[in-house]
Figure (cartoon, one colour):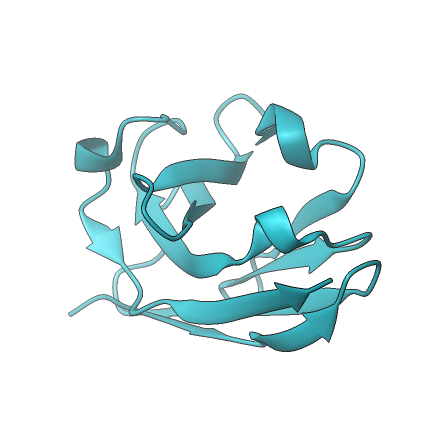
Length: 123
């Protein structure tokens, strides 16, 4: 049974930083993509960043490019999201997701999800 568990969320003031972690357990060796999504208040869930081992690339949503960094430690089945220069618009529940194929922005393509971690940025 695959499980994804996020941690590291919290409250921070604008301009601050947070580092999210997501640990995967179970049949993780086939995960070519591990990604972060977020759901902001009143909005649909969206991809924030993805670590794609098929394409050996990292993808970022435009609004976080240059501020967020995704990294992956395959030895511990963990991905991280370093979030710097946070703004109130980054306030959201952040979810970790995984799939066997390359990363996709389509939520339904991900069979595995974590429970989410809340990030709140105050002005």
